[in-house]
Image (cartoon, rainbow, N blue to C red; front, side):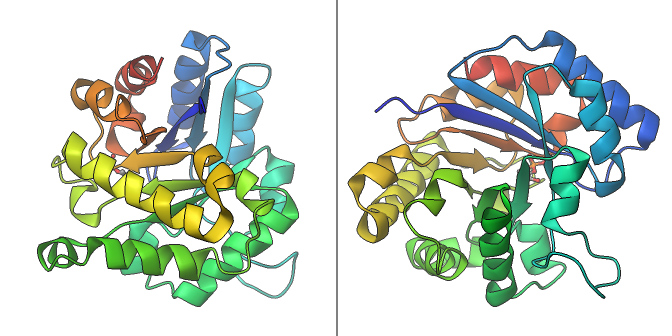
Length: 252
Ligand code: PEP
């Protein structure tokens, strides 16, 4: 089955308002509609609405980097799925390693975020990945299996139509050391086999599995040519229109 590719830029906690609008416009201006390719940018919360306004009418999609699993309420500092949708986001990144390891989000909170976001109509980019110590201890598959089962608990086969998995080895994020094509393909094939066990082969074949971790213009083509690599979640290289667009072109 031919799957689309999704290239998503995670801007993390970078950009101010003018720079965010300029970056989004520079990317959107160069994009042409391609039925096999989805492209999204995930700005910081304060710029989601302005970026969505800038890219309106172009193929560029907008996502958020986090969400809180409630419709509204006394949750100081948090942002609800409905607010993200209202601001123009259609995707949300959940379970990013920086939130797991720096902000110390628990598996159960991550799972609540996944379920509530899907029920609210957001598409979820669910991030998983092992640390260097876990890879060196040959625990990569066990970690991926655990993160898939905890994060997707309660998500049924229909829900998986709105889930993208991002395999992001923690040791590759922001380090300049990307997974080799073989490491990425092996992990992606393992993830797909786990999805097949839970949801059946048809669902597993349809789910997009992105690779993330030091994707750059010069390694994107090789990574994206792997049979189970269906796109990229791009951090650092998404902050410059030229490098992000070069990665987008590598996916075409
Ligand atoms: C990320 O933030 O998800 C990421 C993969 O970052 P980088 O591309 O900078 O490694």
